[in-house]
Image (cartoon, rainbow, N blue to C red; front, side, top):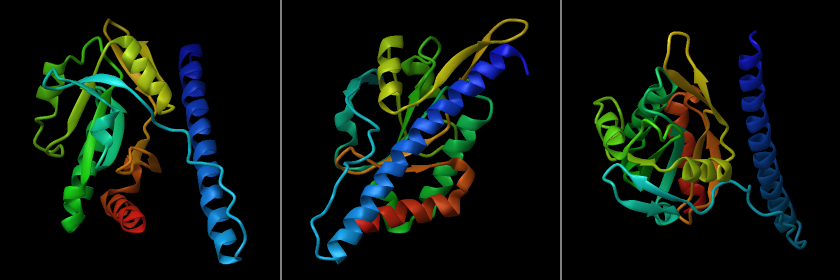
Length: 212
């Protein structure tokens, strides 16, 4: 494996390890609270997984937005880029299919797609890309300056890296997690397009029903 590919792979693995550790801590908190409450003992809380936080970005209409767009909605947050050849379109298609299976709860889910390629992904480029017929309707596309993208990626523990291509041009390597955020804008559970639309729909709906 080329040295550059090894470095990229290692970075992605590190990002995934951080996410898994945070989710494991959150799951431990949930189990501890349930067990303690059932035993009539004081609840021990370690807090929610430290994923998400404040950001300043621009949507596909050119309007400045911040983390308040997550308030009042269940939100699937996904990072990618418009020149992505496979994972990004397949993830958006999986989310579209999952939302189609959620029945009356479908209207409670919004989808936010954040670019990790601000050099090419202008608001107009995001708007054109998100008009693809197989993508979910109403997706909020967000982009920004390189510093803004770096800050929001760090908040969500997203790993990404530019990779130059033979013959010119470049692509972006990035982690592939979907983050389900609750209506308070807090991280709820991690998801993956690899689960398939049925499982995605079931997990999202179950989380909605559990948290009210």
